[in-house]
Image 1 (tube, helix red, strand yellow):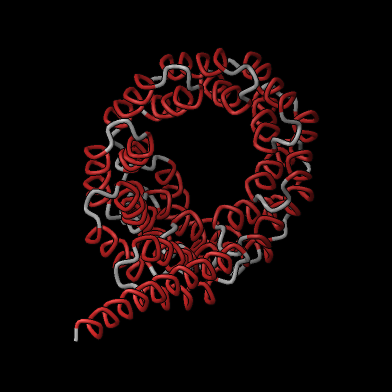
Image 2: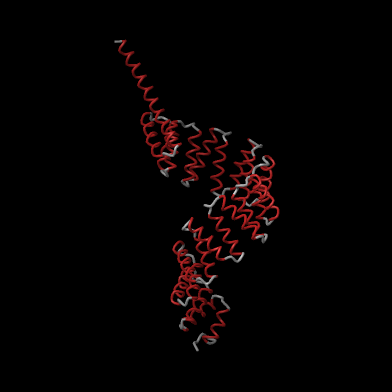
Length: 412
């Protein structure tokens, strides 16, 4: 009998070991599949690993990561919750769950998890870094800066921490403090291109464009493929009136990163200022090609088309703006002006009416609608609108009333 019991015990231990190895094998397979981009395959293997070992902490953490990458945030959160329940002192679980909560806009929940991670590991930089980012999302700049202070206290030789604190101070509108931190980051790491760009951005905000250009040049010297530095330098050159040189920098930024819409948009604005409206329209078109829902690009292209007297093209673009932003009164007003140019008075009146639905006390909209009504032969309606515009403070409406309606608004 004793021998049988021993054999059973040995058999149980062996079975447990086999099951443990099986879970590990599934985990490794899932990890390898994730590295190759096979997320669904990784998910299946991690499911098997967890089925083999219901307390496999790393399997839950990795499966949560996969689910998050597949945009299954609720499923990922359940896995992180399970990881925390398996080991309530596992710092990484709290940090990852906090990152997910921040992504899900549960900022309070994220802060609580970062607080717990910091409580468990007061010298773990990831807890402070993550919490600072959430506080920045909350626009709680003093608290974010306090977290960066703590990191710098722990490691005063980190150029990155000074750079991050500088960015937080910039957002808090402490521009002198931000400049000091970027300068310290550069002192600690003279090859820190990003810090030069950030310091240059602050100088540009202060309209010290010449000094900003020097920092942008240094950043580009450090990293000749820094598209953002070329873009920013171009913007400063535009402010200096150096449009040709600015266009060269915008061209370089686009060459490095042809998928970044802001570079095309900024180049379009520079071309517009350089009186190259055709080139500007082409660049606005490229922005729209990359992002079909970019309202600013449609609006700006419409303005450029109107300047070239392509009113039908402008109307098409303003119509798209209105589809994307139905309460955009400027688009209605400009579309009305374009319709008036092609003598579509009925359409123009309808658009000015839409403007007044959005902004009922717009004296300008009443005046504009009155002008179109007068051209369309509706003098009575025009006089009523000019009268309303005058009451709302448009002094030009008084002249129209005198010219077309008599001193008391009566129609001649």
